Length: 333
Image (tube, rainbow, N blue to C red; front, side, top):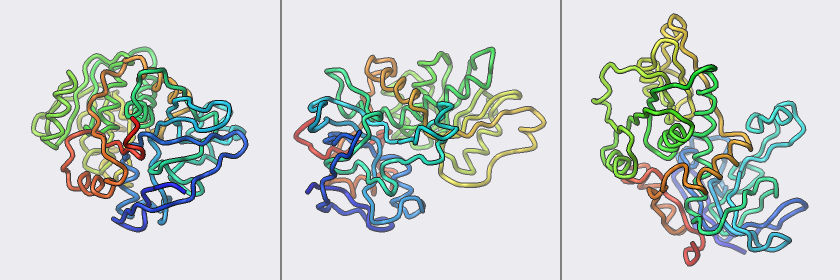
């Protein structure tokens, strides 16, 4: 048996004993040493995600140690998205669009807010010595930003956007900003309404970090919406320049906000992006391991047993850090 943080219904999380999973053929048992709280975990917690019905172990941003088998003791970060490898999307290298994809924290796969999880070997990226598990667990959310920035840059074809506005200073938005710098975009501005989080971002980066009052009538080559509400889509529509690109990664609300008339008349490209390809994940992990995304010292860690309070604090806006990482085995980091 193992300890796990189980989603039992809207706004209810409980520490429970759960069966320790067993690795099948081509899989490894991973002792989870760090597991980040994602916005999609929050959506499920609030009862807004039918793909994640209770009871369920949430969590898909994780790193840990292989336990047993030929790779016993290997430190790894986990790509939680498992593609079939045989559909047309998989064969094109678009694993994220696989029609049969599975991801831990969605049935039939339990998530990583637990002491152990089982993952296919192909989903593991080996960590070099000296990299903390909390940093390695950021590979998943940062890969979302890496993928979006890559798609936005591709939309410009023969040039790289010079100015970028990122909406939202959580791990998705801040991560996208870091990835943009790593991919050659020189001027990045982050719009974050929470004053405490703005202060954290300013302390841990050299980006221009502004509140809504600081935006004025400025326009940018590209806008990345890391939030995904009607209001943020309206902001993206208004502040991307003619001929610019909007990269949309947030999943806050299904509809509303886009100014379709302006986008049509001024040839603004809108790109919806979902997670990342396996190559994006590997590229992001390597960028983390070798310091290309900065110190990544803006993570707050808490024990897994403190998970219910962490979710409450995130919902109430009391968390200045862009990311809370839970520690299922707090004696090991």
